Image (cartoon, rainbow, N blue to C red; front, side, top):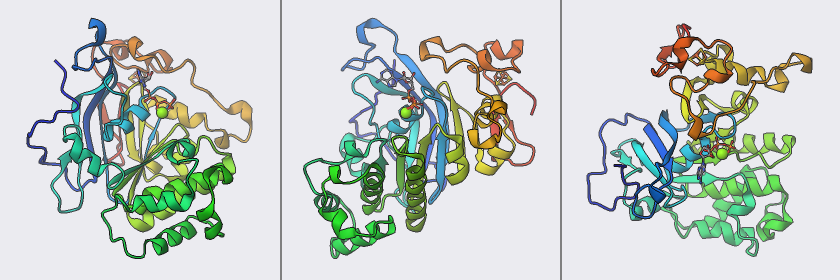
Length: 355
Ligand SMILES: Nc1ncnc2c1ncn2[C@@H]1O[C@H](COP(=O)(O)OP(=O)(O)OP(=O)(O)O)[C@@H](O)[C@H]1O
Ligand code: SF4
Ligand SMILES: [Mg+2]
């Protein structure tokens, strides 16, 4: 009934047609509620939490996935490297086409044998998480932890301490020696997250997935850490998938953005197009709720209600209960149609409203 998330079969894993994108996610749907054999746990129908999510990330691009809590951002991000909790979560539909280089044939990470996927994890696609302490060993110095990366690294091992020192300097550390000899608890949250950025970039990955990397930090430190990530990734030509619920961060750092609501992407486009001419009422609501956009806080609007739980997803448009522009058609069985922006063919939204 459901597609196997970890098939170890020797099927053809190279897939035609992923264009020149580093990552091409197509119709990716994830459900929770499976047992070890891949059957519905306790005979209860698994709950599908993301629905046919599609987007491309190009080389060197800073791509943001934005939406409120529970929209499916982390599930989407974690399904790229199949890091979702097992055996409960499964990719039930779709593909994750990854290209190791411009000339390489794309491979589908959704069906790649686990042994091959392990070679991609960290070395070619690296992750930065919300809590840097989760990624670092508390009883090992930063120096040893950074040197560990080279054990699994595909690049030359010669002169790796020079590479580490240069990268730490690029990440804004003045006293590199002190950082190298420190244990994680001796550094601040912002410093630790910058160490994690260096750690992720040391293996020269093609893509970094950063899931809310600054949520646990003070606002001033957030900006510093994101600037370091953007600067270092663009110097190295590494693409970044940034997960955030903050439209202000999207506006400041991203090249392109996908807006996610209740497990679906509802709008996507270049950041300036989406911010200056939001098409979907949900995107308009997110932008109206940015405090920085309002000199008088009384003019700031919030979106009434909250994201529905997957068990309560409605037919038609899932935003209907919260949308001021909702019509009868929005609650029909049909999916909201894709609409192209008049001024940019790469900007689109899924909504019944004529744009
Ligand atoms: N381990 C799990 N078991 C069951 N359901 C889960 C699990 N993890 C996530 N979900 C469900 O999947 C949906 C999407 O969750 P996800 O964590 O991707 O949201 P998010 O957009 O990352 O939110 P946040 O901004 O709070 O991190 C939610 O409804 C959540 O309840
Ligand atoms: S499809 Fe209808 S309910 Fe959904 S966002 Fe558009 S106008 Fe609102
Ligand atoms: Mg999340």
